[in-house]
Length: 217
Image: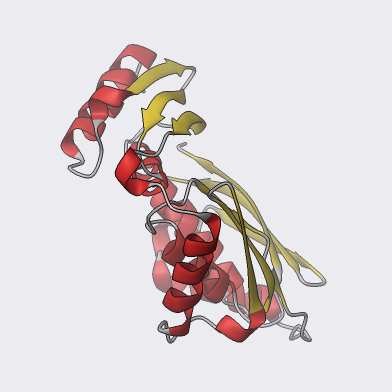
């Protein structure tokens, strides 16, 4: 079990190791395994990469994100320019049903709404927006279309978890209520936690996943 001081040192080292992040612009504080990030970065994409880097560090229980995005002069774009760039990016992306997603941009903050069939579609939409020039943040309010849920859906989700990560699957409890799947238990990393959530969202008829998995033992 790492002490907070050890965890802080590891987080700072991982941020230094990540070439897409200016680690000198990020402050790190740790208390009881919860990492707080502060500072100012020049792009939203860099902020996201910094958070992803911290999640790679073993021992991180949670992240408090307090980083501000202050766009560099060369990154500033008008809201209309950003909206046009997003529409163009969506139209060229084969995994995004662009005709079913609405885009709103206000002071560089992008809000996505609409309804799609699968969680991966709304995730890809957000991933496509994050690195675009001028974007300060993203609110993903895209919903999933409700469809009928097979009677054996809990078993199918458990089987999917076993196929993808047998070790972690043994410590995951799956319950389904209507179109909502709840995951409980523990996993060894944030990557495993996210993978379990993705497996649950791949089940037909599931529109909401309550991910209550704990990271660590």
